[in-house]
Image (cartoon, rainbow, N blue to C red; front, side, top):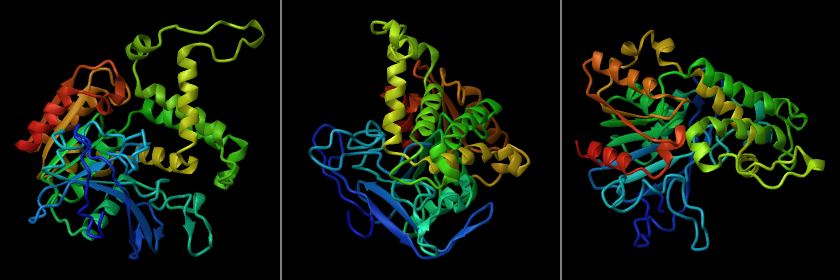
Length: 380
């Protein structure tokens, strides 16, 4: 990719963008955080797919979920078997068609995949920020994305799209920068988490913070709180699935029980969760997990603006919210209420509900119905 961020891609013939590379944008201008604190400078890691047209009118911003990052399509090398987390959506002839659109995704501020976060070095001290890093909100994430777009000289977004935490960012974009956003597509999201979702996050944070290795956030990167972070991921992953989906995939299948090792994982679902926990530990920072889950908890459009109607009063974008029937983390009703509030404000908004047994993660899975919804929405 070149310094202008216009990017290149190598299509491989089956609709994928092919080999991609990330870029880093270093911003030397101080960032003031919504809840206090500041960074004198920061880095943003991002990827782009497709080409920005001469009018700079075909840009689509993808906002990632809690454990996502900037790498949402393509692969980094011919030998790389793992493509980006939304590879099924982004690429030639796919819903986010890179032959038509310039697609951008950045790692959120506070992240651990190249963007400045708790594990980054504080230039003032020469040490990692750890828990001295400022508290993060969705508004902070969006403000940093806005800085990146200014760097790319993009002043209009054809669409902002995201699921879960990414959907929260998309809504915040419509509120904070209404003049920039033409469309918002928010998937499996909410205007504020309910008590149950906050409770799950607190259990995950507690698992991390009670791991002795965590050391008040000052753990060595060579010896991370892997037990606590792994448990947090295992528990959270259950909330992303559904009872029916788990039963269909795993049921009660298990290996032979050894009576001398009765507590060794033997059920397939146990092995799956342990695998999820271990693979997560290898790619994610524990302190970032704390910061991002707290940002999720604090997101509350009704509480912040007094009502959803007040929150949406200046929105000018067309909005599509999509709920999934088996999502019990951010259930369909929470997506519907966003659209109802927008319609009460006389905004252009619609709601769609997709039947799925795959739970909250349905927006990440192959879904022809979702693809059709996105394609039609982009053409409106």
